[in-house]
Picture (spheres, rainbow, N blue to C red):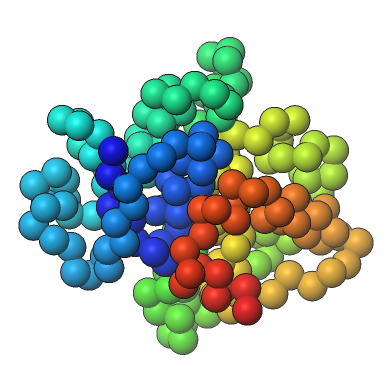
Length: 201
């Protein structure tokens, strides 16, 4: 099994995080998203990352890869057992991408332009606004660590890279506590590339 992974991209990071949570041995090849090789294009017609090759199977689109890994390596499970709860988790992932990942992508593509500045303010205010949801449960709307957390944690890890600071207040404390919990997981530490470690320096 080989994962072609961009060492600074949150979408590649979330797949590496799932692999680490599962304890799966995999060859990880770091690839610059702007310098995709012919080998990747042979596996993935879009030539984007992450791309996972498992024998004759090639998968791309991070959510597809994450769910495949969760089913292929069922322990520990990272999606709920019951269909309603599984659907709700998928919906949370969709909303994280639609509401927050979209903004982070805009910031990275245009950090100092009007769009980037607006997206930075919107993302910061949105995260602060939902801080209270982390008050009652240890993970994102769940007692258990799930694929939703695997999507959210890489985004939160990149806040300093995005130029976003979450100041410690009574309102933001639940979010900061959540970040501390997920970042202290051994799998999260294992999932980080050397370049990603620098985001927190």
